[in-house]
Length: 501
Image (cartoon, rainbow, N blue to C red; front, side, top):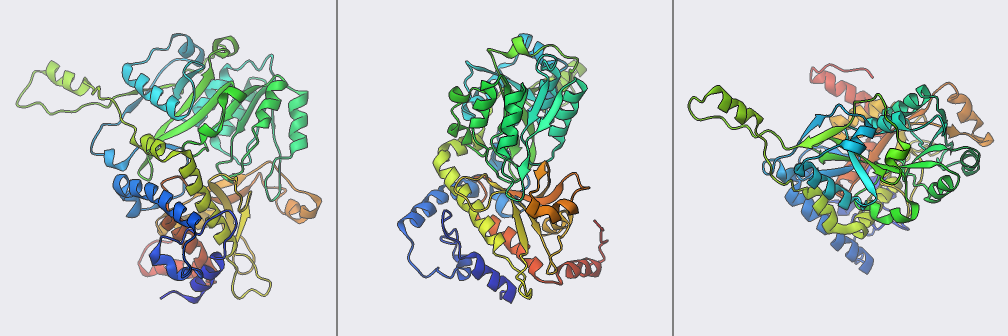
């Protein structure tokens, strides 16, 4: 039986309207939560249910672990393989190469195996092999580091970035650029919607030149940024690095690279969603400027090769030592089938964007509806940072949870408790925030902090409504004023050591 605070919250969150269809439709075990569940479905809702069923069928057949383990909201990027491939086709190994970026562009060789994967990725990312060269790097930080170590900051002195959050990869890029004499700048973002301070950024672009780094959207808040920033930067002599690591599947098809023609582009790939987030980053460099702009550097770390995995076969009986060594060294030459990319291709951009947009907007609306029941002033349990319910927003949301007194609950504690409930969340740190006069109190409160810590959740085309419903139910438990104390006592009763965060 549902507790009263779950029932009340369910009714509140089901009043969603506007651009997000009601995802309760088609999920009969949640139908009691919907106040309009007895009404017949509209044609739009029926079409939405049919479209999303196609993705659910793929999830059920190829990713069965997602329905029996953790609800994953903690990483973003492109999965290469399906879970069903774990016992089938082999994956690959990653080998480090001791070569700098310029040498790789001029003399780098690749095997037929690596060339096949590269062609598949470039096709999926809608990037032309005629116009761009692709380099495999260990991670996003390596891609950034390789680029700024080779970029001519002597003649193009500035590095200008557009990120509303802090990350190790961005910090590495800025640190390396400063050591090479670059003047590092950043865009500013308005509180609390985290929109770009357009006039300030425009002035920085017009007055200077160098390397301009911009993501198409924030992987923390879901904010999207206009393509016109790329054009403005190019018109004023900047080289543009387009960060596509936060894009969902097939979203590169919305960008006409021939129109904006970025000089550099990066994206990330992991192995299996919900099972193995390890992988690599891809750095794309426009062939027309690569060797002429990027110079040799002393950095020989970060570039990697993809090779078939070792095929280990135990020899029968006793074999000479040299035969055994040939069997530890032999590698499979099977062509790798990237089934996760195939699945995304089969669903297509329209279906995937419709599904993820509906889910993220429902989640945002449901979280904002939670208010502490015994609060005289209606204190919200959740505050969203960045875009709210919008037709055009990214599939990520940044938020914080507040208790009935209006005090923020430590995001690290929220993440810890979510993990105990088999829900994986991330923590982000918002930065470069500009507070207006009406937010003077917030400015004073956080003036000694480098940023504002938040909980973040990201969804992909394999995320379903049950996942986000589980997340919403977990967050709604904070409406119980004794929830945190109950959790501590529960673990003490089980003789488990309570870890203070």
